Image (cartoon, rainbow, N blue to C red; front, side, top):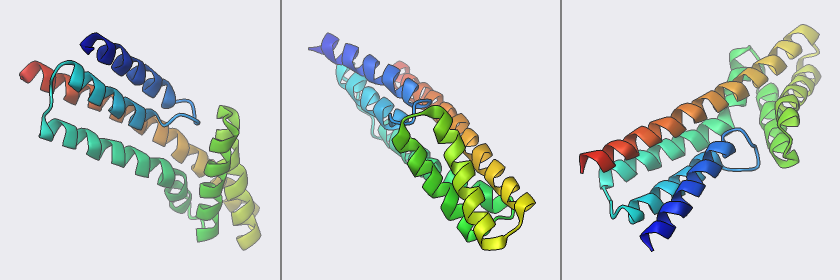
Length: 159
């Protein structure tokens, strides 16, 4: 049984790693499930370790939903540009296409910003910042994924 939990846990970690880059997969939550299964496999449970992993998972989820919106605000965009970036992200996720995931936040934030302000240059800037926010979010998920790996490994080694 422990070998089966180990194998399934590792599979969840691999799929979680892929989920960092594939929009349809919730990478960090899948990795968290992998750590739970690995914990059962190693007969390891530590409240501080799992609490840390839960906090990191929540931070990752929250950052996914607000990164494009916040970056459009940093570009000087209006609340409509932020709303457009958020809607574009949601639409991009549902397409399951990585290219469209990058393009839709730009398109929607550009269209929403342009329709509210009528300023072409500013709207393009806001759209580009939406893409930058999305890319930063992927970078943050990579960081969180490997930080979770380090924390879990530390807990296993330390016990």
